[in-house]
Image (cartoon, rainbow, N blue to C red; front, side, top):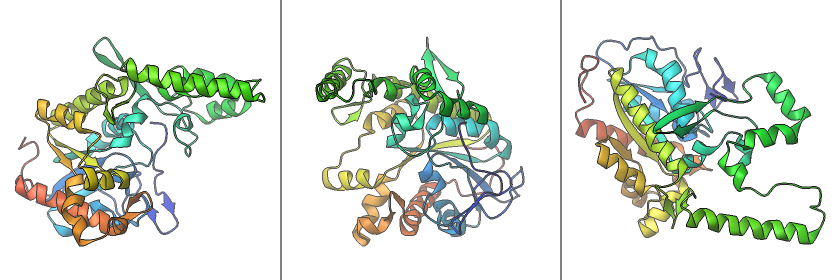
Length: 335
């Protein structure tokens, strides 16, 4: 999966995981206890709830708000939908959850066509698997640097290895490459000009990830994303779980929506509607509650503050109650 949460992982007083790498202060039996609705949550750092303590995650606040709910946190910082899906298949299915939350933050669409994280965003110097489409099917490209020795090769032969990684990485293909003549201002200027023209070509040829400020349904990233949602949703249903997609906004999304009512992921929700998929838009939660608190108070840096996670928990609990999903029932009952 590229990277993950270490069993019994601890970071200062903020993060703590159990023996299975699930964020939490306790162990969970494979089968949910009687009278309990188990919800497993998968996604990136907004699912993992970066920058807050375990008790301040929206999962823990949701569990505390209703004792009938047991909410497991399988989120991992930096994950794409592809990695979240793989973690569900490899580790999540075994927990026999009544409900599966499929977390997605709109920036995640860029991760679906990425293999080496620094090609598009600084931070995690690791590689990941990704899916591509062949014919009408998703095909998994395995993580190219899955072992420690592979990473040592990257350090010893950086250009050779990075060029290989870049063959299947959209962001590498779009980037300005280093060259032996970069000392020349005219060469650097020419590269910048070429890069600008290439970006325009991507937009005009419908290959860019965004079009006119929204997701581009014709892009490879969007097509992979919709197929992954199909697979994730269908796999959960086949394993007698009720799938619910949860769309997380970042601070920029919230501010954009409050001022202009723009959702850059709108083509995605249109697709969900066409398929009849259940989904929760947390932009609505922040729109509903922001008048009670300044937007800055809802975020702790890039991620949600304890108050922001409380708002998420309240909104999700209301959704569950409105859809009659808080009453304990036999596994597999409900749709």
